[in-house]
Length: 448
Image 1 (cartoon, rainbow, N blue to C red):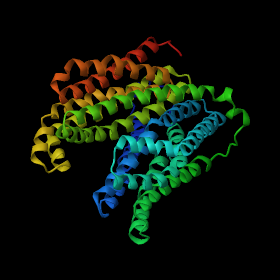
Image 2: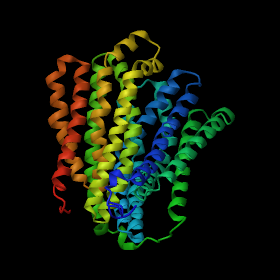
Image 3: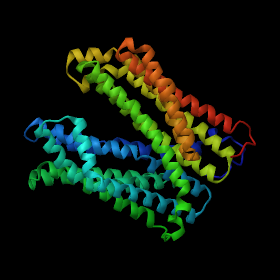
């Protein structure tokens, strides 16, 4: 793509076919990668579900959830790496790109070491909150004690994937994800049904798959360029920018997680059926995230590249392009849920009472993509801009001044209050970030 937002015929970027094709080329590999990513967990559940006793599946699910939540909170590693890598690409500086790579990998390594050192306290906290019986607790311990040793790979993969996305090498991310998922399937079958390693085999299969993603990622990074790290890149002064970004992103992720945890536990307090309804409805949110995240990843890379090139016109043109595709995905999701929402619920459960109860909330699900796509898109924009403070502030404001107050005002409506609050929360995030972006780039000559 040219650094100019218009072609030789002065056609705006949005009306250039090549611009849309390039955006699609970034979106769809990540869409496929996002679709295959849950496959590792699905295979684990399928294998565990064929073992003797439901306690095996319950215990492994809890242990996996503990690690998944930790890795999700550490997602700031991926976000910071993407934004900084994209900006380095815009600067056309190989040195700057590899500086981001080494710093991101260093940060991931430090956090991984801390997780390994604190693995037993983390496990003890997980066991306390799970309130599991002895059989389930034994499975949690067995699975966790194996899978935790994949933490260095899991966190390194966040840095690797983030860096590759920033360099717009999305197909390489897709290849590594698909390969790892296929490997995980094979190793699960081998370790459990041939070697009879039981729960430890399932954990080991996932751990090895994580390390394979790391190896493939490193190969993809170094196959073209081999820039050695410089000592000053890993000094405290040089790491200051990344540390500030990561700190702000961490607070942002914790605030989001607090809202999601509150929604889960409040649903449980409202009764078993409400908890089950919300578990079903959250699957719609997962489906929405598959597509909207793919668009956001593409926007992160294109906005970051334009930011690095100090080309505000191109930056704003790419935001408009991202808005088009984000809106298209949102409208498509809504149409699918309006037409086949009840069918999707029926696929998720065969309990008629639960189908009927969950179906009553479909109007919320119809609105969800139309509201959520704004915050997904603007998160992508601000990741590309590496304005983590704005993302943190938007999340805190939306949580403290919108989500919890809206829920409190409407709590007499029970579960409806939780979902109305969620819609308001997502909307507030999208509006606040959109407003701030318009303010930042409020005139054609505005630079940052």
